[in-house]
Length: 217
Image (cartoon, rainbow, N blue to C red):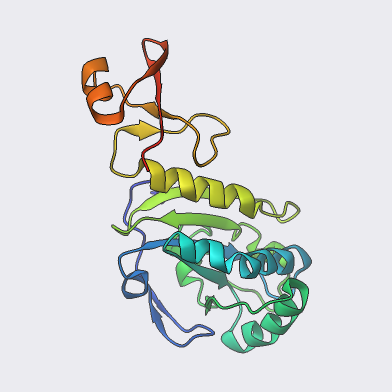
């Protein structure tokens, strides 16, 4: 069975550019983004890692750690980081783990159990290792996204999705289409109008089942 939203994110131990990491310990009770790549020294992935490096302060504001996964060895990651930092214009201060064993790729259902790294492989051999996972403080998967190799990930959208996850985590709220932080949110149907107003203030009732409230601070 594949990894689903609200499943516990699989734990693992791996070497990384910042030493050995025990994933559940590394989470340390905060949010995390795990984003994966099929190979080092590839053009789209280099731009993505550079985008993450430039967003370091934004992730810190959100109490969110970021970890890159690539199915190459740490020695290759260290060399690649020089290219990433040259493109980013800043340090890439997040770990990139060694997944040459494909342990993480398989645990997170990015590759089938029988997958292996062939000699002389190309990025196409591990093309499906192109996913993003947002993981909550309770170690549960909150959101997943998977991209083809030809489409660079939109990290503005990943930040927006992270904000939406954080805004609705553990409360009877949801975010509407195209929501941005600070905009009104949808009140869940578990509360009737009286309960919803007591908890979230005056409602903007568009339909009996579509009720908006100001986003809690």
